[in-house]
Image (cartoon, rainbow, N blue to C red; front, top):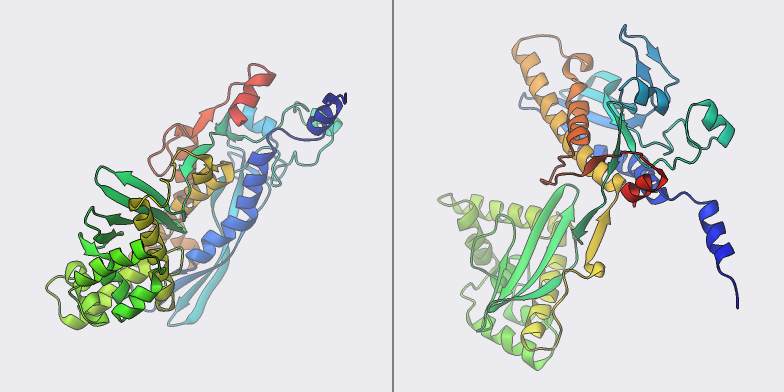
Length: 417
């Protein structure tokens, strides 16, 4: 009989309990922050010929600015707790101001503060020995993984969400529904295919007309002939039966007619050329954005929709089971890093909106345009601080950040796991 406890003991001895939160936050700072900046790298305000380009974003270790404006580099978590300050790092963004594509100004600007997780790579406590931690007034048994906002310790609650980009088939009253939450950056679009009892397939996606027939959309996506549509589906009797029913109900003949059917909904009363262009823009931007948002991705989208429809038809003929929304394979857990990513993306969008407003205002008042006059660092910091201190996150989630009362050793464990 092998005694397993020494192995379990050794596992937890050299390992931090809150490691998953810390890794998640590190990934956010190293990978996701630059990605969010790249997503929005150009800002084009209403005023002609002016634009701002973002280059790289830098985060330095937490520092403190005293009341008289003097900066101090050494700023440890203990001081933040005792003086009711926020333990945060300044964010610096390299920006270029262009006028008629000529560089006018280029500067690394302070754009706001980012709360730092205790014991993450940005934190001063990272990699310190027990003696050094005691020297800094910290408890060596503390595992970090939380933030300090206005002097109080806040832990982010792991959120359970439905997995995006996964097709889930379910049965609703009389219809079969195959749906997917397609995600790209901050945009989430739910695409559903509905199969009615008589075998007709309809599709809905953001900004789509109601009662849009799936086969009309497939034609608009580039499966030009009925033969091409039939070939896209697998050669199985039940499925081909449904395909034939839908082909008979298909009233459009060409790709152009199919696009116009969507165009008449998204741009009613406009000229044909504009309607067709709007329909293509809507398909590219809002239909299955995770596959891509270019014209070349349309065929791939068509085949993806075919796969979704096939699943719905198979469910109707009892060839496949319903997917379980509560099964953990169809869920994802969002840890601190992911939650901070949502929050920062939202705050950064607001910062850009503010930037455009400041540029427009400066130009209309005939003032000189330069980077330092148009950047308002509060735009990012205020939104992040508000969410962290109230727990009201974007996406209408509440109670995401909780006050962590450290009454005993187990209290912290329960908050972080």
